[in-house]
Length: 443
Image (cartoon, rainbow, N blue to C red):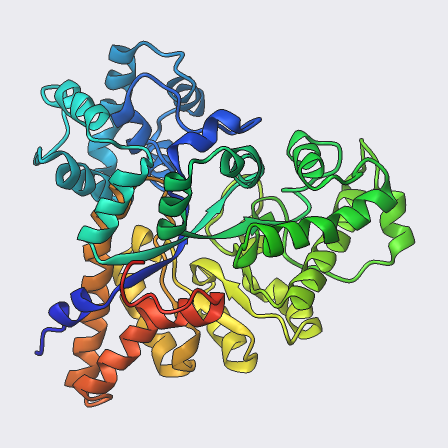
């Protein structure tokens, strides 16, 4: 069977969904600050993706909280994590963290245990981990990653687009631009009325967000700020963490009645529908795509609520808005494929799938290649730290190579056609969708 690994390694990769944010953003955020515990190693192992593995293995949520806020003694922290690590050491988020740590520290171990924990923790602290620009750019250059499409949650976004970027030196601003193109989280939870992140955004754009009419204007003013001043490349909707994505248009006066500090559950949905519809209107006006989190259950929503099928009403209502549907809608991969087969404004983003299962990533990548036009498939990591990013890139390329080899063996496409296809999937599709220019080399 022909090996396409070398070809995949030569293609510059654009991470089409990434959360590896600059290290300094957290100090400006009003909430949800990055890991502030005593152990960098524990923070990485209990990061997004792998944390759920530990929780379902039995590590109590209250213990995770104590570790993350730095309230737990370092030795006790180590004991608690190592108690459950053997149960999840084959889970891919943990594997990628371990591989990435080895790559970046030069210290490779077969397993993380009590004998090497402290030494590895010290090496991580010394390796420049956590989003330092020089460190991040060196990893990107080594792994042939030419751009990260960065998205941050709520208060982190408000901090980044406001005080953080305003305070950067010219050199750091240039490095930020080299590493990132950004997508702003923009939905009714990210800009929820009467919250600190929304008040911070209102301060930044000089808007009144305390009254309904002011808040309604604020949505448009914030969209202009994002796109025209901060040059964001698209908006991100993450409400699938909290509700089904069954958006419907809402009359303005009904939304006005729902605009209150202590809304009922029905009023929360009413205002959420209204705000998201307004965000989609701004995306259409400013001609930027919209990423939407689907699948990947997190928080209190039910599994059925994370299905991308709920989006059909919005997709039909905005045929001129391009929807970048994240995570393949996992576990509703087939349903998303059917949607994409019928709506040309849907893009399939397989971000996070390599964190779940390489077998599923390869299977659904192959299915989508066979059923959807080649310009509408993207791949992202969905990782939050440099170590996990470094550890998973080779796996992503190997998965693409495995799909390519099967296509070649079955006579589906020639070597040249396969190269062109994966140049699109790993690079050009993201460039075209998000208008980031030629990313064949790092700027």
